[in-house]
Image 1: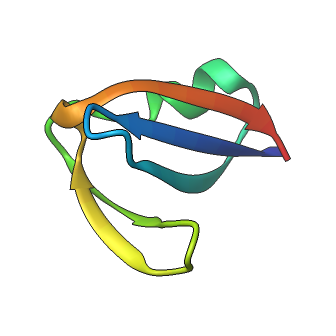
Image 2: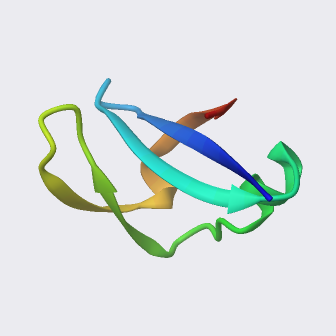
Amino acid sequence: MKTYRLTFIFSSGKELIQEVKAESPETALKSLKDGDAYTFVDKDDALIQANMTNVDYVRVKEY
C-alpha cells in the first residue's frame, strides 16, 4: 500500500489535506463518498470537519 495525500479544494478557495493508504490513486478517491463529513487537517494543523458537497476538485499525490 502507498500513502496518498488528497488535497480538497473548496468553492470558498480553502484547501484541506487528508492522507490515505491505498493501492492506487483511483482507489484512494473511491473511498470518498459525496455528502459524508470528513475530518481534515488544514495548513495550520487545525482539525476541520467538512462536507464533500462543497468540494470543487481533489488533487491526489503520492506521498
